[in-house]
Image 1 (tube, one colour):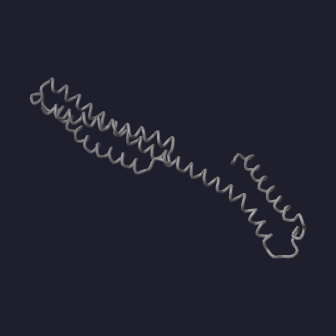
Image 2 (tube, helix red, strand yellow):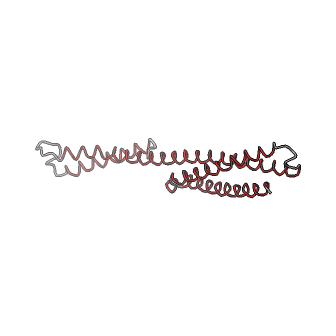
Image 3 (cartoon, helix red, strand yellow):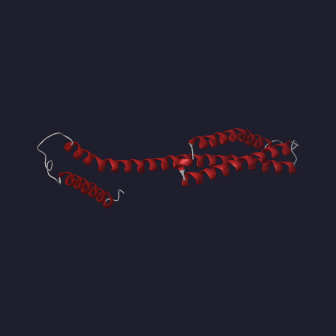
Length: 183
C-alpha cells in the first residue's frame, strides 16, 4: 500500500516535470527567435516552480532510499524491487530538475546576450547618425552667425554651394561607413 501511494505521487511529479520541460523548450525557441517577446518574469517563474518541485522530490528520494535499506522482514523481496524502481524514478526526477535549472540559467544568459546584442546594434546606428549630423550641425551653426565676411555669403550660388558641400560630406561619410562595414 505504501509503495502504491508513493508511486502515484512520483508519477504525478513525472508529469509536472515533463510539462515544465516543455515550457522551458518553448521558451528557448522564443528567446532565440525573438528575445523581445520573452520577459525575465517567465524565466524566474519557471525557476521557482522547479525549486518547489525539487523541495518536494528531495525528501521523497531520501524516503525511498531509506525504505530500501530497511530490514528484509519489514518489506518483502517483490516489493523491494518496486522500491528500488521508485528510488530510481526519484533520482531521475531530481537529476532532470537539476538539468532544467541549468537550462534556465543558460536561457537567462542567452536572453541577456541577445538583448545586449540588440542594444549594441541600436547604439551603433545612433552613433553613426550622430556622427553624420554633428559636422552638418557645425556648418549650419557657423553659417547661422550674423557676420558679413563669410565665404559664399553674398554669392548667388552660396546657399547651393554650402548645401552641396554638406550633402557631399554626408555621402562621403556614408560611403566610408559602408567601406568599414559599419552599415
